[in-house]
Image 1 (cartoon, helix red, strand yellow):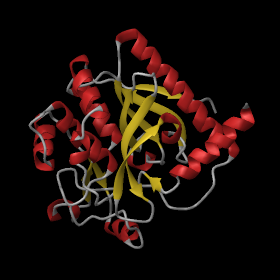
Image 2: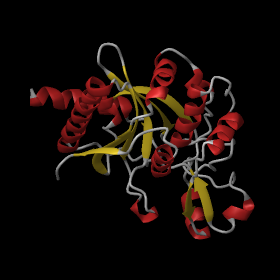
Image 3: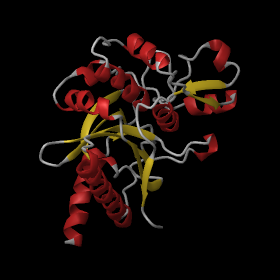
Image 4: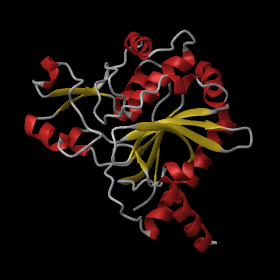
Length: 266
């Protein structure tokens, strides 16, 4: 059984290897131990989400992973997506990924196994449960409609300006998509961002020095700073959408419950 799981994991990892959430494009194979731990985290997360469904009918959560070490910026998680339950009990994740080595991104629907097989920095899952009144509209949009996809901007920038429309990174797409899912009249990015401002969303402000910006930009297709207002950029202030800021906002605005976590032992 263990050998079979490893083989399945290898196939899954190969299928997912061309897309990342702002990670490097090094073709570094995952070790068998990492593959097994990724699958274990996915299975445990599935069990926890199923328990929430049995307890209170949860069908949608905002699910995050720690794919990169962002502790230098005071951040714990790197990437999030919308996880939703299908009638057969399967949990799927709708999220945006960067096409490796390019400045383009695409929306993917994946299982939990693939979501947690992305060369994780830390084997930890985190999620928040949207408020009960939002569960039905979110679930309907995620399973039946195209609204979350219409607001997608393919031009990808890992540190895109939170209130800009030239680029769109993964976490930015996720919250802009939320606006389209809960507010039927929202169909454009400008309207989605207006809704986010109205609801009190505040992006993370990163401090990135000129030489850091230059080093990140040179030879890296998916990082740019030219969409940030000059008065912020030249003061080394980069306002972008992070998982930590999204979780804090959803809790503060009572649009979702507290952050729940699940970690594998070391």
